[in-house]
Amino acid sequence: MSGQGLLRVPLGAIAAGVIALPPEAASYVVRVHRLREGDRFVVFDPELGVEAEATLESIGRRGAEARIDAPRPAALRPGRRVTWIQAVGKGDKMDAVVRDATELGATRIIPAISARSVARPAEDRSQRWRRIAVEAARQCGRGDAPRVEAPMSLAAALAEARAAPSTEGGALGMCLDPYAETPLGARLAALSPGMEAAFAVGPEGGFTPEELGMCAALGFERVRLGALTLRTETVCAAALGALIAVSDARAG
Image (cartoon, rainbow, N blue to C red; front, side, top):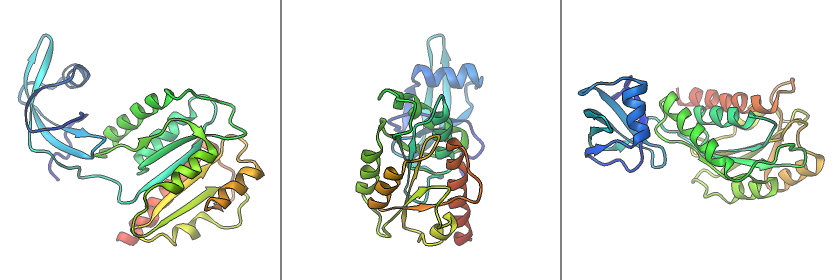
């Protein structure tokens, strides 16, 4: 695969030609990774999912220039649209969820405020989560990054996921609940290749009975992830890891 193993640098508005690297990108390439003139790297646009190989042309006191090759669709992008609704937890737990969701193929992340959410993050908190998503995409080799919404109520988040444009295969909504009768694996087995998936996860303490009812009313079936009760920030890695395993098994 072209560009495999090269340093990856997020960069918007990729176009062929010689450009002055933005200050942050120039510092990352020259000072952090100590690339020299003539060295190759890859730039990618996390918004559009395109990438291009680049050559470091010159290094100056005030910046650096790079020659960008012809852009191409990013080699590694999720094969399925996946929305992850996460009720915001305490501290930096949402940071970990955004990082895991990005590395495991989520295409949209919606931070939700539920009845048992202790934290009430400001809307601009999503900017920090967006930066985390872009950095996670860079580290894992992904050519795009998920859309990270501003925090909203659980009801609004569920409605947003339900209103999202669906693929030809339709969409499947799942609400993670350790007391549900249906195992997650049984529902994942029903996913066809073109089908979207949407997950909803509660905060510490889980969703209230009323919220579980709202999830069901909006098409999110209650499913359990094994016999153990996981921490809210652990569920994402476990559930999306299971989705990848099922999808890869079918592809193989």
